[in-house]
Amino acid sequence: MPDLFDIRSTGEDCRDGEPLASRMRPRSLDEIAGQQHILGAGKLLRRAIEADRFTSLIFYGPPGTGKTTLASVIARSTGSRFEALNGVESNVAEIRAKIDQARTWRDLRGETTVLFIDEIHRFNKAQQDVLLPHIERGTVRFIGATTHNPYFYVNSPLVSRSQIFQLEPVATDDLLPVLQRALTDPERGFGSMRIDAAPDALLHLAVMSDGDVRKALTSLELAVLTTPPRQSVVHITLAAAEESIQRKAIVYDSDGDAHHDTISAFIKSIRGSDPDAALYWLAKMLQAGEDPRFIARRIVISASEDIGLADSNALRVAMDAQQAFEFIGMPEGRIPLAHATVYLATAPKSNTAYAGINAAMADVENGRTLAVPEHLRTGTRKKLAAASGTDDEKLRYLYAHDYEGGYVPQAYLPEGRVYYRPSENGLEKRIKERMEHLRQHSSTPTPT
Image (cartoon, rainbow, N blue to C red):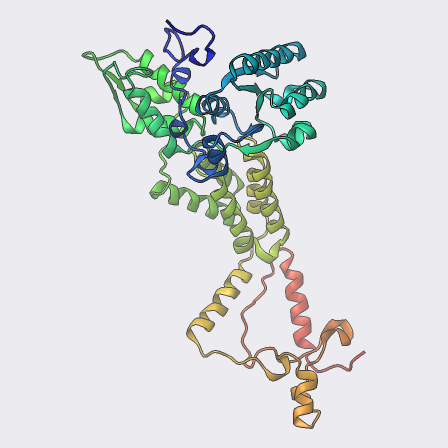
């Protein structure tokens, strides 16, 4: 006969009508998908759980990354009761009631209680402050979860008493085993059914779930339960997967021809000053699940390679877009990426800096290594003159700021090589005019 007071057993058995995502909730740390940056062997959080040495934790990250699941697994792993509240629905009276229950269980049975509060950022300051004395006394072990950065959205006293861990969207390679386990698990999944799931269908569900385990399992469940069986076998095809997740599969691979061809088309559209084409290829990559950080890196490269000195502000826009994406993530992160894409595509173009460094590196790699001219070496103004006993003009370094306009002609290379050839595009035209002016007035002026 089950112990009616042992609420840890509640919900462990599969019930008719319970969603697949709920039935497949991990029961141990090893079943949790992804999050190896905090749960991998030797990581701080895993060590704290296994040693049962933690007090208060706050998890934050996108929906479906396993914040509630992880809290439940921690309670199970440490032999604690699990009590849950929600920041949207709960009030101070409910918080106090849960704490009173926790105190009773601790005093009567010596059991600890994990008090989990989802969407902790929705609690106001007074509600959050109610927790503080009970956390300090150890009445409850507090675990909060939020989709918002707790350093900005959770009161400082609660943050200072908690260890903060960020959960990341689950990678496609980590989602695929979860889907496979759901298909084969006879107790919690569909292991008692005959299901033939095409690999490309499961891959589509994993990619289009955007790192959300709940979304992936819900879509799989919909596909299984709505697909009519043929000869007692449910065939999950790519078409069925597309309908279940309501997103069309795009012909795209993460490391094959489609990946390379699409990013090539994207960069060439920017270089060719076609913002419409560039936006289309950007949209295709984002929709297909391409890593936005990869796209951001290529945008930064293009800002210097293709726009360059024709509009040096392009590099700043590209870097700002990369930083903005890191700050806000997807899906809104597509907006600064699009901002930078359009800016680069419509900017004047110049590859002179890119061509110049390539030519210089080719000379360094393949040609004779040039020695640094004596007058450019460290401390040559005094040391060389003293050593030679002369004031040879050839051995003297001329300090440009001592001359009118901050310029004085002198040799900076032992050979007259030219690597930078400014174009007349955009702002670089002004650079070209200045360089031509300096070269026309190459006679040594008198110091000011």
